[in-house]
Length: 334
Ligand SMILES: NC(=O)C1=CN([C@@H]2O[C@H](COP(=O)(O)OP(=O)(O)OC[C@H]3O[C@@H](n4cnc5c(N)ncnc54)[C@H](OP(=O)(O)O)[C@@H]3O)[C@@H](O)[C@H]2O)C=CC1
Ligand SMILES: CC(C)CCC[C@@H](C)[C@H]1CC[C@H]2C3=C(CC[C@]12C)[C@@]1(C)CCC(=O)[C@@H](C)[C@@H]1CC3
Image (cartoon, helix red, strand yellow):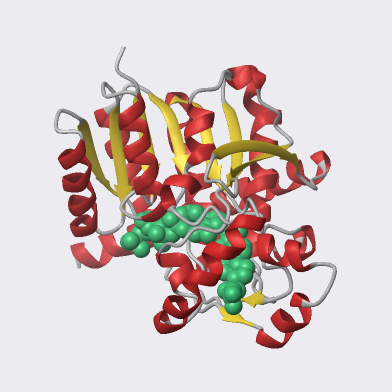
């Protein structure tokens, strides 16, 4: 039977590399590339068809950062497919990243140097903003839009895979400020929230046949990472990056390597997976890719609380949207 795989943020980086790898694994797959920009989506589709000329590659317009777009895209998915075998929740942003060079150089000579290169802990901040739905943009894109998509498509789903990050950190997340309006680590907070949500989904939905996993792709050179430093700087330090890679397995560097754990999960029986583990894409000094589970720093109780808070926010957002739609209808009649 033809399997259907939907991937958000599939037009570049790790998402696009995953598409390549999945088509190489199973040429009978039906891939659905869910992207916000249809021109970029078309380009990705053409690239995939160049290497897999008989592949079934569909496109879906989806801006995960917009409530209306998620609801419309979900309607479209329900009209097109009877089921989604794998939903990869991969789209993500890190807007206005700032590298603290002082902390970076201090870190270089500390005991935490390996950890710093693997997680960017303590050296990276972001500046977030409100989107047109009145939500924090990073929270809306990296977490809430995906949550809403899952809620809309639930009867069709069986496997969920989140592209999280080792940058996810408990101390960056606050239940009282789950959107991270106050701090400057919105990326870390949103990724920690996705880890928690994945655990909560497993607790609530495994009995109904829905399984969720999280991965970290390692440090991969993509549009997201190129946004952290000026491009000339990346060109300068690229040889150093490849050198560091010999000593640290988290420097996966290429999108193909970064997609290792996403691909690996595609081949696993969901019952054999650990809901409390994050599956890391790793690359050895000799260039061998492998996947390694590592325990996440998460409380089950807290993950349930986050789940309830997301349900509440969903209600609020839907109510607001229907009020806006009603207002629009009234003014159209006038
Ligand atoms: N690169 C790295 O080192 C790491 C990346 N990650 C995670 O991997 C995931 C993929 O990122 P990566 O491949 O690195 O970076 P890219 O920037 O190449 O890919 C991000 C993808 O998400 C899409 N996207 C962003 N915002 C939206 C939106 N509102 N609606 C729909 N699609 C959207 C982008 O589309 P568009 O082209 O239109 O912008 C793009 O296709 C992210 O979740 C990221 O956080 C995790 C750890 C490390
Ligand atoms: C030799 C150089 C001067 C090295 C440059 C240092 C930094 C630019 C990198 C060191 C650790 C990196 C890192 C990320 C981005 C680039 C660094 C800060 C990520 C935050 C990218 C996105 C993620 O989700 C994380 C898993 C990465 C962790 C490590």
